[in-house]
Length: 67
Image (tube, rainbow, N blue to C red; front, top):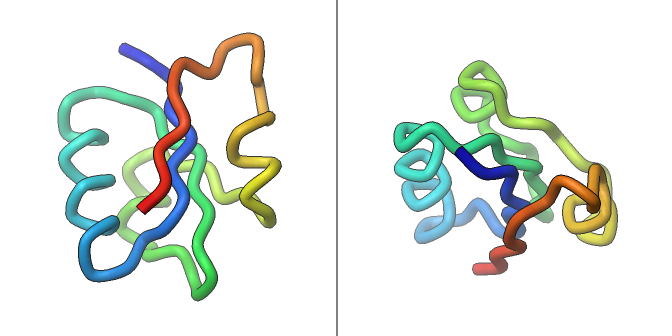
């Protein structure tokens, strides 16, 4: 599938990120609070800044999504 940058894992973003992972996408994650462990356990990559979540592997990053 695709590599996706995902910013915002709050009440709306966390379930959306989970659905994207379940569909087989690799997520580069950023949020203001702690990144949920279940998303990391399923292959999510923690990024310290929103800029890194969109530029990390930018040549392979398909889409950036902010909630």
